[in-house]
Length: 45
Image 1 (cartoon, helix red, strand yellow):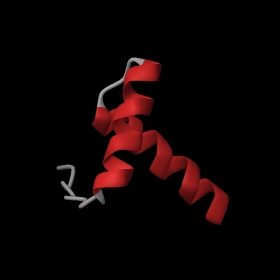
Image 2 (cartoon, one colour; image 1 turned 45 degrees about the horizontal axis):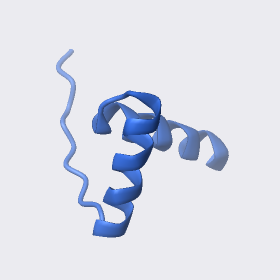
Image 3 (cartoon, rainbow, N blue to C red; image 1 turned 180 degrees about the vertical axis):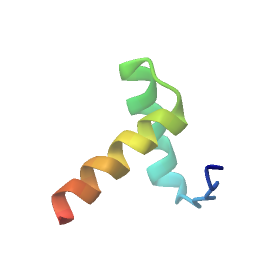
Image 4 (cartoon, rainbow, N blue to C red; image 1 turned 120 degrees about the vertical axis):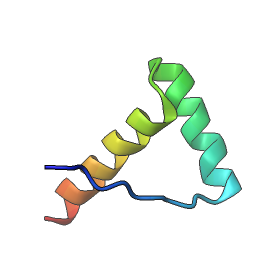
């Protein structure tokens, strides 16, 4: 099954925060964003 790609546009202030978190945890920005989104989706459900 082919994974669908999604483009997410992020406000500059959030992008800065994402870069800081990525550096702090030593992860790529994409991986950090995936973790944040999974956590948020878990909080909603």
